[in-house]
Length: 86
Image (tube, helix red, strand yellow):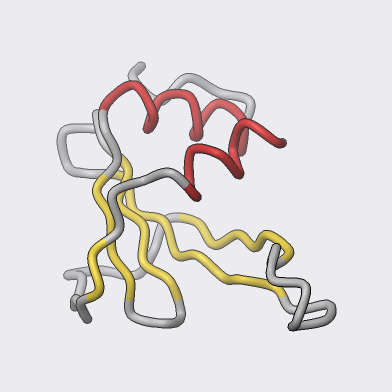
C-alpha cells in the first residue's frame, strides 16, 4: 500500500475544482500524513478514463490529477488486484 500512497502523493496535482460527467468509479481513503491533524482521512474519488488507460483523481479539497499511464496501471492494480487495461 505504501507504493499507492507514493503514487498519489507524488502526482502532479492541480488546485482546481472540476466537474466530472459521471459518478466516480471508485472512492478510497488514506490516512493523513500531517501529524497536526489526528486520525484524519483524505478522501479520493477515482475515475477510469474512457480509453481505459488513465486514472483521474479528485480530492475533497478541490485538487485534481490525471495520472500517467504507468502510474494509473500500478495504482489500479494495487487498489483492485486487477489489470487496468484488459
